[in-house]
Image (cartoon, rainbow, N blue to C red; front, side):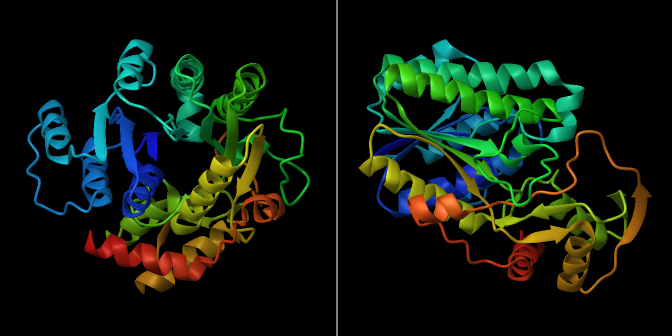
Length: 340
């Protein structure tokens, strides 16, 4: 099978690329190496995902990415330095390959930055996504998986969150763009018979996690004896999901999509285990054997109070079964962090 993955050099994307290549599939990776965080991290992700651990001497962005493309190109892996907002650039890629499935992971991520840059989030997460759906229509690609987010639930009062819950009250531009992606996906499913699964990820963590996310940030600051920004009273809670469990859920979704037709599904991928901010911090402290220096701050606009996934549908439909508890997941993350 030939899979086109957008955002295949990111945290989740690079892990998925790695697993698909191990299974003998071909991968087309589209990534624009956005400056949301250091592009060198994505280069390292890319090299890890194709099991190329050779030394890479960094010079500057354009030259580094050109070199990366040349050393990673193979019969089963092709990397494109491409922005999904550029439909003409995307179309050239679609013309060059016969694609069996599109797995759309690329997005501008982050709740807080979306409040500061809402129009850019609309451009990438809505217009960029529509560019992909249009090309799937034009090139008759009938199988699509897309990344949504638990943020669409906002401050949902019903716990745990179910796919059938009303999600008409997002509290950040990021969440709103993710809901728009789900709605537009249904339009293309209905009009053009594109089989689609939208996956609502719940706070993914693990090796290669983005450095702006709390677990990565807290670990780094604790080790450096710096203050950590601690928002609220520590009772906010998240359904933290280990990266291996997320990848398992994506692979099971791929299997389901390949063997079924006429489907449009939204699935929660979480751990269904809620961890408070206080518990998260104490678990990291225990794994590091070191205490944090807290800087207490008020709650941030756009932050939800609690996320908790009802994963019954995913378990029933695709056989999703997460098996990494939070303590073990943090231990694995810390071990990776200390040797990276």
